[in-house]
Image (cartoon, rainbow, N blue to C red; front, side, top):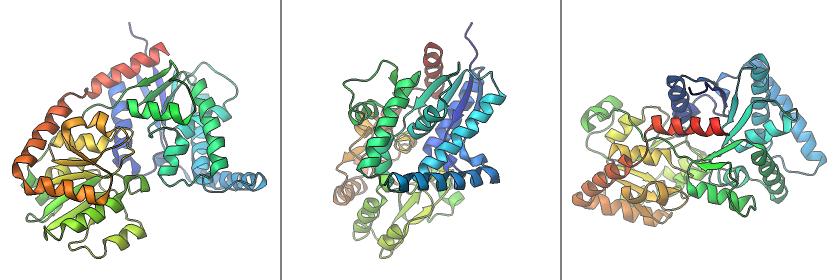
Length: 389
């Protein structure tokens, strides 16, 4: 008989983040584990109370004071304060529920905070998922954290210790594991580090015409879709520049970025485009994929690329920047190109100008996606590793 697990999943997603790839994936894993008979509690930042926000403000002040005393920059303080509050909330839940068998930390910075604040060891097993490409310090910098040399050394040292003391570390791709080994200065991956990707999508797709009507999108426009929260790591500046070039050839082409509110830099970059890009925050990914003529991703540092896989599942002809785990995960399912605006524009033009090539990539996308495991099988493997940890 398989032992029943009682798992506390701790993540940093705030309200609105749950609609993006990682937030949805965490919830899918929770649901699959519950379906298999295990108990799972999810503690994210969507449920923060007023007291939690007040505690975060106080924690920031303390960390700002400490950083000033140590002559450190303030850039990573908000991220660290957020993780510390999440760990303190997790400790309260653990104290109330001694039945927890595992705490599953969905972020290396959360793991650092947990290791720092949990000096008294207990019987609960520690599982860490590292979702970035490499260390939290390096992936954080790519995502706009702006760490200086001293902070980089401190966080890399702390991350190395936190992951060493974890019972199990899960990474989404071989690329993510090799980058983490390099960043932490290790000779090889420790034995308790495992590569385990995500399950393939299984949502229902509408017909293109129906999806566009539902979303109130113009039926005559050529729609290029990009998916993921607006962040530096997604390189939407390259996507906007590439589509702007294409508008000289395709006057009716429009870019949709399913990622939320644009930054001022992106807004300024898009001002000369006609039609201008649509920045949308929505969890209705299936309808947007069904409505799209082309999918594009300019990020060359994806550790897995959930949105890329969703595009493959939907059969949308796709252009993806080669780098990170894209070659490993996407493989033949998309047209891979250099992570430059010119290369993206040329690749998109190639697909748009040749229907036979577009149809071929639809076939290749479906073929590649069919090779990825089901969510059910991924979850069973996660449970097996937790039981053995």
